[in-house]
Length: 176
Length: 392
Image 1 (cartoon, each protein chain N blue to C red):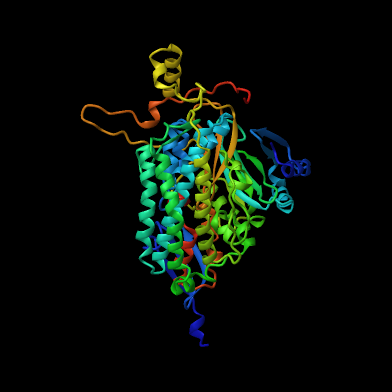
Image 2: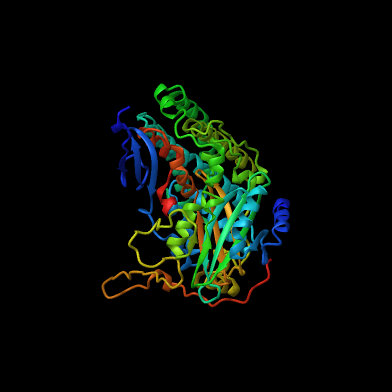
């Protein structure tokens, strides 16, 4: 069941959102990039004051390629709401939420480090987990995961991810 | 005041200071002994778990959570399997849920005991560590008894548990729960009335409730500052809604408040364990859904269908529907969440670990602003930091 406070906020932000997605009692609002800060500030003032998580998803073959995901929590009303911004591969720049939520500072640095998504207006957008001279952004789908095969005498076992092949996408099944 | 006293000094602390509880580096800007600016530098323990989880099936990924955060291992596994169960839309049987809660709360006590021992050592109360580790060892023994492993259990499964607990489990847990209050009283006598402990923690590393909220702090850090947020109460998961327990809150937001909150949390965890032991009924510990759970072994010799299901699950894994879920649990450090994105395949497209230590550490510069250098160690200890969880 989606909490009443989340439903109220969804109605409140309806004018800013361009789409809505519901799955397993969670509601996600698609927000255009230029209205994101407005939506975050309005959510904060409506009681969704905690930015629990900020992350990104790389959907490589698809366009737009990146999704930046903001998870907001209202502690008092026990409600959550997810906001999502879609970004194209070239010019992947989102407005920085650090002015609304100071806690977004490190989270945005992590997204920049891992996905190469830039945040305009961020106080200091540098790498946070990887070394400063690292090339590439590890969580991008086109960044290879290098696995070292173990050499035994006369036998080289498969690397872990080759043991179970990735099965093709199955057609969407309706939620049970 | 002479001109010289206004000069600032940049001091590098770490990456391997003995009291940093992991590989953390701090760049401090000091005016005399007073800290003006702190710049935590993290990433030394970054191992790329999130990337690796994208290349393995949902079931294979169960090994990663306890390695991300190695002090509260059962809670980590609980967090991950709950997220996958939410994605699949299934729920574990009642006995499995009750056992998971017992193990999670034992894990919480074990983690808090490590915190208590190590942070006491940081302020020179050296006798605490061995007392705490002695008690923690009893919990480790229980974990070894049920899973065969002290720390990296891999005991929880999507849809239940690997196998049922062995005989004698309830007795061992009950005997530990019986001894715990006496031990905690003893520790409190050692610390709460200890002048050194009080002087080193009271009024140190103060975090206001507003800052705790703004920086996304959760767990005992936020509750020590009076933010009433416990995932077990706000978003009950895995059967927690049926249990009666209190959420202790601190008023002053200093290191001492966090200490009192954690001590009380251990008592509340014991309360939950005792209630769970009373509720424990015989029954299956694994889901009866052949699309998710492996068929029981005796069935394999009788049923061709069971063999096919076994083969499909082992060689390919299950396929959750297209969608994305976020599922969180209350870890000893705060809100531990998994955000899983599925495209209908047998591997997650994205597995994001929302780690509480990352957000809590971000508040460190605010906490120790205008404190002295010697308090940095106390502040880090009071955050109860696990660098593996920060860096993932």
